[in-house]
Image 1: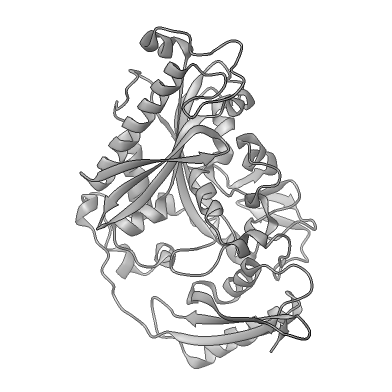
Image 2: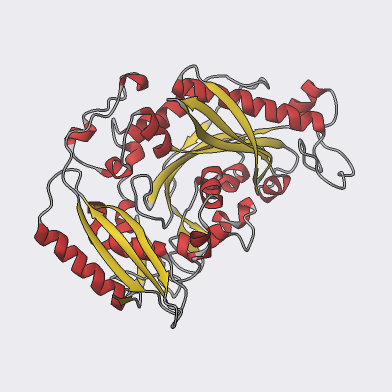
Length: 430
């Protein structure tokens, strides 16, 4: 959730205000939603689209020689080695085949996401119904695995978020996160003092939660930082690093790790000491621990010089043959196999009186054009001086990564999109 929370926090004010409006997709008349052989009842909260549901069966993290699988395996290999400040023989379990449908409680409440947080918005999530959704982050499984008794584990999987359309955003992407818990005896044997304070402090400090002894919190944070600096070096080689203090609702203290790579500072991951309440939710309140999370596409695009996030979903052998999990990561760089021409189409409309979500607009376009749409950018916006109605104009770039598109098929997609804008989104075209 660190990566997800950071992206949500950094969104524009417009995205933050897009709250409720969404479309149901062409199959909304069916009574159920089927996700990987599990069936869920559809209700008024359902907004997952057929094009997104199709992605749930692709399993890119298990596709041989796929760049995302390569990065996932590299991270898992690093954690298979003993690389921590606090000595332990604990093995990191890897969970990378977890079903993507979770409950609202798992996705939000279990990791202390505030009830009014923007990340809960219907305009930003794919809801199956009022109780279930496609997970928005792999942290949705964190409490469950801790409750099962796991003290060190990695979770990797596809996650889903309604988002804008451009080369770095896609409604499905992949995350990987890690959790490590320590018993009081493990910590106290090193710090020589109790790991918890009793009674708890009246307020937390910058370095420790109310219930944690400063020495224990610092020991866990040091183990976290040394471990993750080693991971960054494992993936990127010798690079300059820096830690940035930040805020996440599920860890304190919280940090972001940045590296200086290819002449710029790059955010690699978010992490922190797990909030005591999260451990209580997992019935592990007598322990302390750390957690981190990162986006696999983000790392793969940087490490392999992949310019467009849509390429990860390509079945074109000219893309897939460029990666081999038996080769060193630094030896593989994507080489563009072709650059097909783009076609631009503009669409202008008046906003409806009720809430409008740009993510809903993007969803409908993706549902029609799939990966043939490369970007959708607002190029004009104004408010009529008399009626006070707001008008927007978006420029859509259509381009295939594998072939040239014909004018007829582009016009057909654009016409369908305009029809859906009227019928599904209640937009008045100009």
